[in-house]
Length: 123
Length: 123
Image (cartoon, rainbow over all chains, first blue to last red; front, side, top):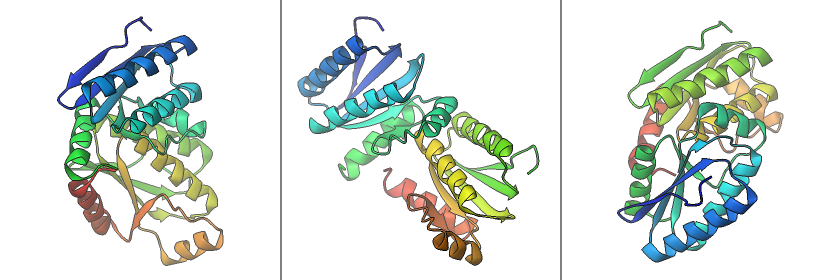
């Protein structure tokens, strides 16, 4: 994980790209940077792209769920995109459902989903 | 269960037909094939037709719930169709509610339900 957390602004949404390995230190940095950017840009939606993560296990799933929770407290909705089929199988086998986390296959579908929810309702 | 898992693409949706007996080995294959196809076709919805299963017990219900969970992580919604009346009775008697799994009587109604959910809101 590089020092910088890549965050791109697309309209009212932020696209956050998680890459490489997530370690405790970098997780804290990601949480700080992402929450600060949500507040600074007054974003209403966030996409977290996890396709660049080398490993997605129950630890990483918890990190994602935490991050989604933090962003939610700031009033923005998150969609997680870029999950590989094998990762989906592993997470369910580990009993990690990410039940409260919205998912979409890729950034395009995720963005459409955020737009749809912004148009209709904020849940 | 034949080696091939019958999957048909209908617009943005996939129709997966489960047939015969579900055994541990075939379940893993179904999970692999279905998740791969959802990702490959960028499907937003899936119908699982269980009318061809010889037996639907709590094991099969768990398999279906797991599969629905995996597909959800990939951003697609699932509706289970083709449940026989006797199966509905058995599942409730077994205490299996499939609470988080959407169901419809047949493929036509299931497809309408997927379309309705795609049009109205993505949650």
